[in-house]
Length: 116
Image (cartoon, rainbow, N blue to C red; front, side, top):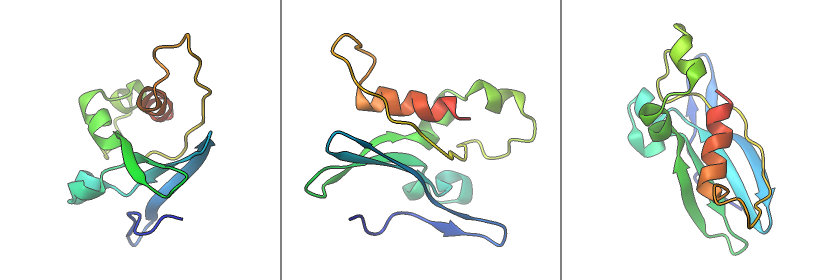
């Protein structure tokens, strides 16, 4: 369904898609390819949305989010040497009409930030 998703192979690890979730007719993909932390901001960690017709858009740039507002765990862990984070999972949430904080970007950003 999706081509050319970012990935990076190092001697120690392989980075790329780390999680997927379906919400209604959309597929959400969490990437962890390193981005600016490995020298290429074009591959920043992100959550992408793929619609039913295959259209792909970025919901949130996770690397930028973590630079702007580092998660508490990142601030307290002196061993954390990847400032943009290494996201490893996400969860889908059901949007309700009463929850104005439940936009796709807001839900995605909170889910990823909470996982660090």
